[in-house]
Amino acid sequence: MSFRIGFGIDFHQLVEGRDFWLGGVQIPHAKGALGHSDADVLLHAICDAMLGALALGDIGVHFPDTNQAYKNIDSKILLAKTYELIQAKGYKLVNIDSSVCLEAPKIKKHVPAMQAAIAGIVNLTVNDVSIKATTTEKMGFVGREEGLVAYATVLLQQV
Image 1 (cartoon, rainbow, N blue to C red):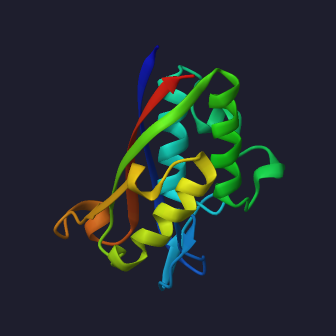
Image 2: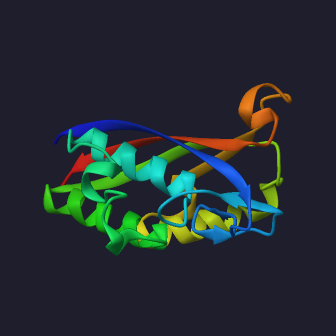
């Protein structure tokens, strides 16, 4: 039985006039992430981690921002399609560990909903989906609330 570890990272600018999506959940905030899709950095980082674990490239290879089919797409769809790619290669997810770096909004109360959204798409329990948050103590572009970053690590197991 084979195990594979993958790491993913994603960055997006924060701008006014966009909805704020994180972990498949819309969270009230004055700004939202700018991107071709709904710009859900957490789901994008998880997709990259899964793809990287099997050396399948990155999210931009599979869902390029030059393709209008992905314009404003719900990133939960991208996560589901990525998981289908993993399954087609004979693997399943064991767990996800992730961290989000942002100053605002505070996401702690939204974590259970994000865990449930992600777990439901990738056939895990909420206890297999870790979502942590941190700030950068007002330093850098994250500290100035110009953007946010998400990191994800996944463990895949050959079925």
